[in-house]
Image (cartoon, rainbow over all chains, first blue to last red):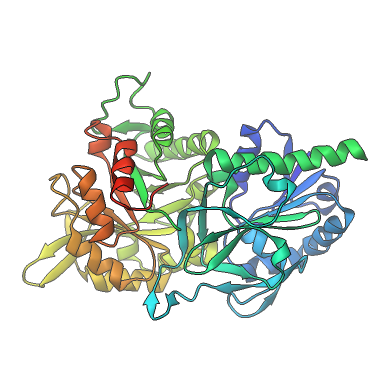
Length: 211
Length: 252
């Protein structure tokens, strides 16, 4: 069973519907115990980093998520959910994140060499694969749907599995061990998005069989 | 590189798509989900559903439509029309819409944009602006209530204000060009696109594929929306995109 974390921050529905389209069993919950028992966890989210972390901290879900990551079971953060996996964000003042991945979340400056560019980064952009990972296995580079004003900046290039070209290079698929993140919305990214989610679910299945 | 988006717009009344849909091959040309799927297959990047229901029941039905579209399709879509409160936004977004478009309500109560943006994030707040050139003003004037009421707002000023308040995108409709099929209002689109930092969707006036090229190249639009030329099959999303590619415009 895939657990989808409900902490009051949006896109639960579209992620749930994607699970249904894939024919995968899932549940949506805010209950720490219940979520800890899932074969894999998805941390969705749209909205502000600060609000999201406050919710996660107040409900004790941050602790649960960190423990879960330590358990070795696969975990996936989507959009804001991915950003939360990193150490810190500058959105509405510096806020500490879950620190499961190295790097920080910063705002698009909206200007490059004196020329303004649009923020949010909104629309379909092409993935470029950088590092090998089971999450992109069997998938070729194609377009996915992004909507975000903040992006991840990391010194550790190993965690960036795929990026895309905007006015800066935007980490799009990240991962370290069993913890993955996608900056775009796989659940809104047509066939490619569904294949990525399928790969994530496959990781959970393989692990369940192993254990 | 980020691609330019092509967005078909569907008018929905009491749960049914209305206003000239000529798709003979569809089982039911008025079914929003079937039409959404059709446009998705053609390569539409996003969809906009405008709820033009007059009744309370019609609005409730719209939530079901949104729910069903989100269940079946893996592309983003915006819902507009009759969204007047945070509760309305919540209903649509929870039902699976990715963005909500505010028009009249935003002009009447601009703080609504901020409320929505702080609750759901700016990325799902689209402010729709109906613009008409006003010779006395020497610029475009904002209209509300489906274009029936003139406001005191000048379009560029209002667009900037909307973004300052939290709009993540501007859906800009030229009332002068709408329905004429002579092309988008390039001067208007360019003026707004240069004035704001968020993406701008050009709307009103699309008559052929070349008009889209102009909207992106000269109008500096980030996305372009059309209804009747797609509904009446004067062209298709696929054809428009093929043409855009041949003209060197980056599309998916």
